[in-house]
Length: 204
Image (cartoon, rainbow, N blue to C red):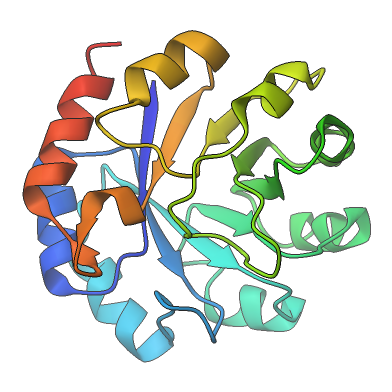
């Protein structure tokens, strides 16, 4: 079971990730969100990230040139969290050799199935909160996800914590979990919470 810790913003966040070794560390690289960082903050953080942990750049309706020119050679995965379509994905593929993931909100099973038809490598299924892109901490509607007919691997996001991760794994069998607000205290990453949930997931 794969683990992604998203919303890296501080040197301490990277130190926790280097210590507990999730598979992926996510950086919100589009502006305007609570955990957003720009290139000037990203560069020193990615330099100290352990090479064994893959870097995920999270983008929301970002101009393609910005993604490719500033970040494509510095990240392993592009995660698209906005309204990006098949043409957008295909344009990225012309210049980016890593994986491309597409986030979709669990509003309806049809929404999830439509996202799965895109030529992305994996999905990230998040909770649906009107007007919010992600990182809300609200648990996704697992019944809707279970109804979706999927032949594509996906990460489960949305309110996954040490209290419910085993239940989520048993109910939905995602390929991995995306964690952010559930491993924070007072808005910053909490080492003890990161350690606890990674320890639980590694036992699955």
